[in-house]
Length: 130
Image 1 (cartoon, rainbow, N blue to C red):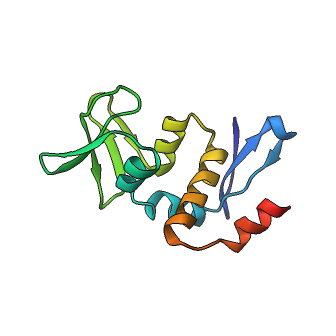
Image 2: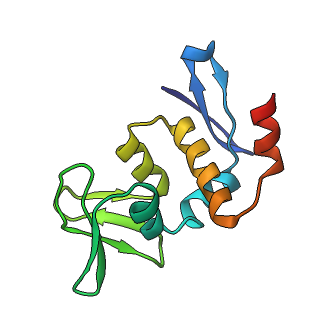
Image 3: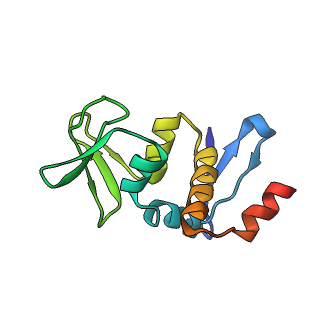
């Protein structure tokens, strides 16, 4: 996948399979997805990864190495595997577990966040009907 950056709007993935069209996500949209979807809930309820509380820490089965040498930090909303030394935010975790592209993952997380909030995003609804 090719990527393009703009100073005012952030990250723009370029998908050559779709004739080189760009899908735009604002920095705020990505911030919201990374920071306002609790990573523990995402791991346990959406991705259905085996998880447990051990030594006072939320631990999950690492999708890369298959070990429980993991922990999450609710303050930063990040997860880490200490065995394979990989850090995950919510976007990384979904991309890894579901083998999905960045764009697919952002759409998945937007829908999941709407479900968590019990509301419908009018912009996302309009995009689906176009």
